[in-house]
Image (cartoon, rainbow, N blue to C red; front, side, top):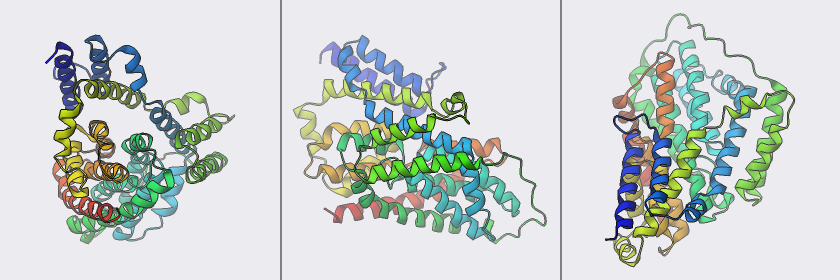
Length: 410
């Protein structure tokens, strides 16, 4: 093995190991920093020439993700999520009705908008509403985390890994939604049933005599809400009309930046810069590893795994996602999809499995961690065990249904 290949392999392993751990012991490096250091190492040690590294960065995916962050940020600033939560969740007068509303609102919004951002907005709102009716916030927080992942399966814009799949596969927005929206709907039903059964003691307990006064979080700015919803609706219509998703989202986001009511820095603070840096770095690291190792021998070995079978590919994607996280898992599988008999089905399976497997553990997706951190900040913490008790049955049931549904469709 040549020194370049040895270096590329070591950098790939170190980068993905660091991404899986979320840190490097003894250093102040987060996932974004780990990915950027890995990308720089790939170039510095000959794993990938600089011009090839620049070409490896998928600007369409980064554009789409940035644009959707701007759209969601504008909705948050305008107060849309508070308005939606008050309208849908606030009308729920029983514990199970509130659970159903939480699942539907979170999953529905995550189907169009980026699920991580939906978790940031929804977690404090459901805590407030649960306390209003004298209930433990924990089952509702678990529902937010699980439903955000389940709902985001439905479309190319639901989560970052779907965006990568969309760009790499060329599957139209409408075609992707037609295949995966039914799986998302069944998965949301599974979330409701699992939370209701596993946490049934929380729903059976008597409520508090008096509601806890909620903190003041500001009022929605209705003209801004209307403007942002109009732009969002136009973007979605463009998606279904066949306009490339990156272009449609970028144009919509640009239109929203033309305003007299919102300071630009408020919008820019909604953009998750570290996530974009992590993506850019991982694109380079994955390209360097592909250049060094993906040849006829490895392709033949992977072909022997039987990944054309939807069940096998679902299992492989789920395991890989829980080892290195969902976005890196998609990038690892990407070089081999073109060799399969049904590449379109394979991309759909990968999108489904890498997303739904994120519900398995608290560490399985960024959305889960966002909800857990928001819960801790609001004085309603929950831990790994509470999440696993609900996440395990939801993950097994939804992955099995997804593999069956996609396997029989081709």
